[in-house]
Amino acid sequence: MNNLPRVNANGHIGPVDAAQVPRYAGAATFARLPRLDQVEQADVAVVGVPFDSGVSYRPGARFGGNHVREASRLLRPYNPALDASPFENLQVADAGDMAVNPFNINEAIETVQQNALDLTEHGTKLLTLGGDHTIALPLLRAAAERAGSPVAMLHFDAHLDTWDTYFGAEYTHGTPFRRAVEEGILDTEAISHVGTRGPLYGKKDLEDDRRFGFGILTSSDVFRQGVDEVVAKLRDRIGGRPLYISVDIDVLDPAHAPGTGTPEAGGMTSRELLEILRGLRGLNLVGADVVEVAPAYDHADITAVAASHVAYDLITLMGLSA
Ligand code: MN
Ligand code: MN
Image (cartoon, rainbow, N blue to C red; front, top):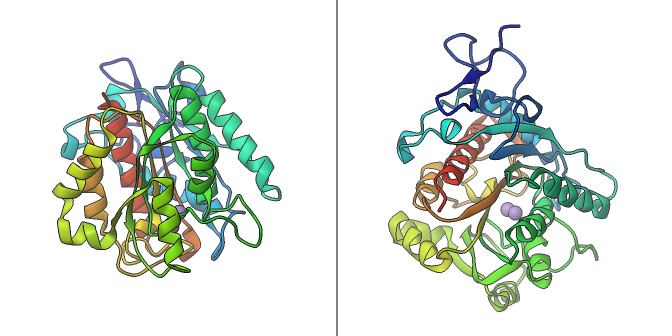
């Protein structure tokens, strides 16, 4: 077929030309970019992790990656909000999906960690599409190993994800950041949750979280303080440290992201989330994920459209990193 990749001015292979092949035609890679095996070397690889065996409520995020890829067909190559052409500045490619064991969480975590290390061996940065939030732990392990130090983290989520165990299980989608602190892979001077809200099991959840070093800007803080103040606080805390950004799509209000497993009322709008991300321009972004998109609960691709735009802005930020 005529799905010719487009080589741009920097010699990078960009998206399939939408003036030659309609956006809705052909197999979906992220933003209709080339596959990883079609390029010599990628600056950024988009990779899917079809895994949701760590969820505590509604399953289905294993189908999230391909749902986001389908919605990403409409992304265009120039990002006016950041005045950047991410696919020209960088060679971005779609690395497909990791083959993870759905019946063994420990093995799945090892697979994600090893695949992430393999993909980043020559300096490639990863933008990972989940999958449930369990996968952030092995992704952070790989990011810290590649950075050579613990990493700063911004965690956008309705939930803290620093609980200890569920039914005795240590590795779940509600526990990755507690494990990450215990493992010493996070720089606890520079870790923050953004957008948290909703009922907790008890006040101790917050006390534990604070003890681990997390700062919190709740969904309510974002609404009351506004984007600029939130961005200033986050930038101040992160400084020049290597930064990992983890976006649980349930950080958005269910009106903006119905397709997710543990929705909570009172969330951020997609505009607020994108504005905050764009405020992080120039930080040293070393890796990112967008997780918990569950298409079975999505309507009219609302969640996938939001997630694809979040991923696009994250990739753009990687091209503008310090
Ligand atoms: Mn969540
Ligand atoms: Mn989460």
